[in-house]
Length: 159
Image (cartoon, rainbow, N blue to C red; front, side, top):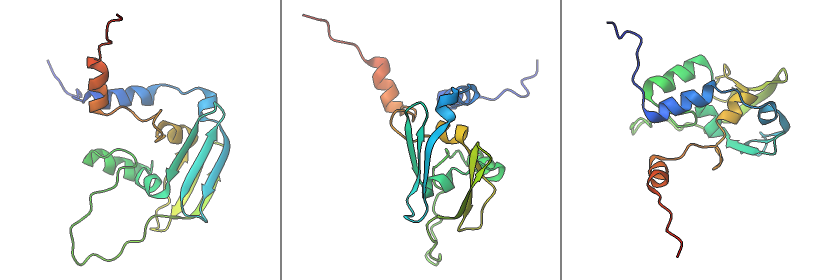
């Protein structure tokens, strides 16, 4: 019997893959209002048609670039979207400017494309992708500690 193609994954990876495979409701991935705060240099805010609000800073968005190269690099190092690359300990490293978009353009009616100040511009941030990587407390998956607390919670008996 061959086990080729079988991959062992953690519970978190399985949960994330499950979420990725599920189709989100149309209202959840349809923006009512999109604010790209390029001049302020702060980030992107989206009000969704289902009433949800999402926001990301530019550093997070650059570290979550959905292009194939960035996705593969994150996957090979075990980083999540938005998680920064580890800093190289080099006392002679030059100052690196924080990420900021030089240009932001809509891609049809389904996405945004950023041209970053580091020259990268391959990522297309679809509404579906942005909603799935929402960083608000309602959307982000629970930490191991929170999950364990929920699993071991036992309500007190009523007196």
